[in-house]
Image (tube, rainbow, N blue to C red; front, side, top):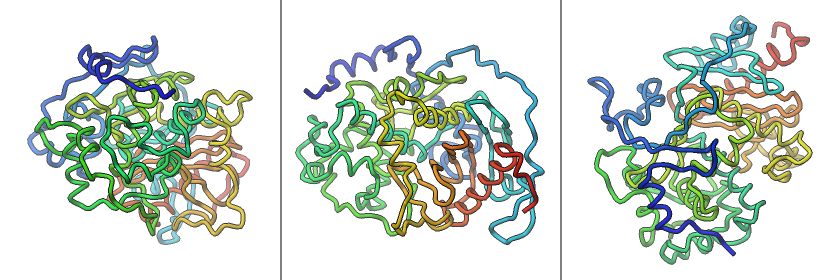
Length: 420
């Protein structure tokens, strides 16, 4: 039997302003702020790349949100950490000798870096106004986490990989497109609907990202007749951009688990490593969490990588299915997988990137350099918040991979320290 979240129950939760499944996963509704920051930043430009260093830390100023308080007192443990800024590297863009600080600051526009090894912080740095205790929006980097929640839902019997998406959305109008789309295809993220620029603009407006007007919300947009009668194509180039497919998956997850998305995320992925700082999840005007609305502190973002590391090494693997970890880490073998800018053998899997070269390395890559690097063998996690202008070009990916390798040498394997 498929469990569904009754509309009346959803309305009750939203009206009371609290999700409270257990003592560690309580979310309170936060009303939208003034939708303006200073004299020059408002709803029309708050997501422009030149403003994101300010605005991604104050998303609730511009949109309504759900907020989870930290598990502890929020006091950061102060320890002396080894510096890595002076570690020598070769700049992949021009081949010149630089140091790691140059690569992070001038090439990646890095705002923050947290490195974990064996679950412990071994170095961190903050720049350009990023503060350790504030959640920052992940935007596009959220989709792989939704795919992970989907894989967990399949493992727990809430979803069936070979069944159509429409089976789990009984309140959506009949759609041939959704009947043809399986849960597996949606989670694998290899194909995308052919959205027009007009579609994408109206989708953002429906979610409340770009307008002050309270509309009918994202579910009404997703349910519009003919919305999903578009071809599914595999992009010619690797893309990390957000699309309406993300919000479709968010709705599938909430309804199939009969649980609001923010609460589901907390119960499945934050329970083993409770957040040190507040967690936010932006919503539309109806209180429905948006697929790209998750905000985490950099330390808590890094802990998500540790959750995957622990799942691989643990005998019971917690709630993350073994097949998911094995799929992420399995060698590309004879396949000619390639993502330009990354090592040969790199390919997207369930929204994550299996990295070629050294085995058992995976990355979660969002927009503008924001990323999460995981080396399962070394039990190493590198979390990075960045605001590099432009798309995730091969050059950006090449700089990211060079930075990951340099940090690995500088911190995780000091016996290999040497000039390039």
